[in-house]
Amino acid sequence: MSSKLIVGNWKMNGGLAANQVLLDGIKTGLGAMRCRVGVCVPFPYLAQVQLLLANTSVDLGSQDVSAQVSGAYTGEVSAPMLRDFGVRYAIVGHSERRQYHGESDELVALKTKQALAHGITPIVCVGETLAQREAGETEAVVKRQLAAVIHENGHCISEIVLAYEPVWAIGTGRTATPEQAQAVHAVLRAQIKAATAHAERVSILYGGSMNAANAADLLAQADIDGGLIGGASLKAADFLSILQAAHRCAG
Ligand code: PEP
Image 1 (cartoon, protein in one colour):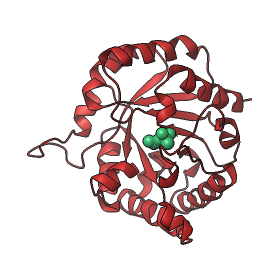
Image 2: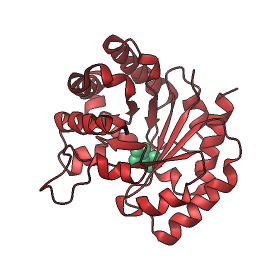
Image 3: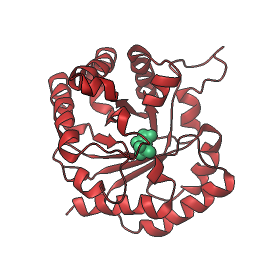
Image 4: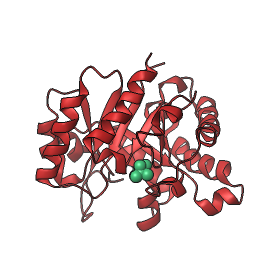
């Protein structure tokens, strides 16, 4: 199995000075960590963070990408523009974008396609709300969300990163138990396997209040290949603790 992948999602946080402090702290503690690492930063800071991450093993990511390549789409940022700043990952379909910006499964699939077409690895987020979980719909919801992305992207699906992020666990401090997360990851793994002969290339991350205290147990699950980290990616010490948990998984 390849090493775990830990990606920070800064959301709409940060500033020129704060970013420098955070990344200096992460770089100082990084050492020879045996895991893959990325940070997904707000668009205005891509240039700054690209420079700060030069000659490190930390990859740069964005938190969204347009479904269009160029033209009259005010406020959008295209995949080729992201490539100009060395962006390796783009989060697509985060629940906050589905919820606050009305992003549909189909739009998420098109954004995934744009990223892939321009050499950016999309981190495709899927996950159920609390109401859907309580109604026993978790499996159906995540399968529907992933099916739209598979439908649009065909055999390229092996080039995505998938993130299972139960909406009720994001930013709430309420984490899925390792068993709950593993059960959904196994469903997603089976769906990917049915769609491509190269399913082993797809890392499936867990996201939702992952922190220093719970990371090791979550990352120990067979189908949890890493984490997408919101709040705990904003403090170097917290993020480094999660990286250390991932590092220890490498044996
Ligand atoms: C996220 O925003 O992707 C996330 C997982 O947030 P948090 O870790 O804060 O729950």
